[in-house]
Image 1 (cartoon, rainbow, N blue to C red):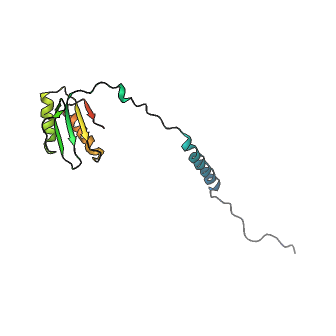
Image 2 (image 1 turned 90 degrees about the horizontal axis):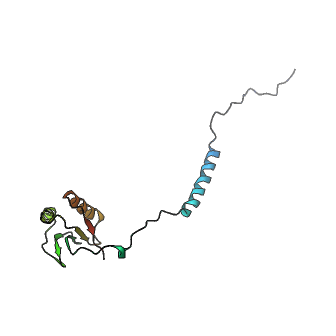
Image 3 (image 1 turned 135 degrees about the horizontal axis):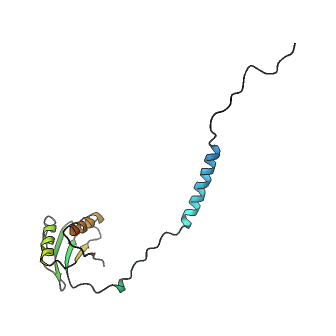
Length: 139
């Protein structure tokens, strides 16, 4: 009697995708990108020199934001600021000053402790009032 060497089990085909080689390739790409990233040169911004700028105007509107949250606005003429106001009616006072002399630029002098958001809100408020020449004071 012939004996069959085969057992009753049949071998099934694997229908799964083998992702191990894919993961290996991705890890190699990640390592290559991590090594290459510090070698890329970020774009260099060509800033203008301060010495090449024009003479600052002697008459301008000055908006000062202090570290305690108060603000003042006034006309700066020959080194003296005229009137100051609280933050509540700051934009009203700025609008009045701009209507009397619309050609004067606005200089915003904010303390370094003031958040950028507050300065940006003041710039946006000035732009809404129609003030096109707005500058920021620095040391």
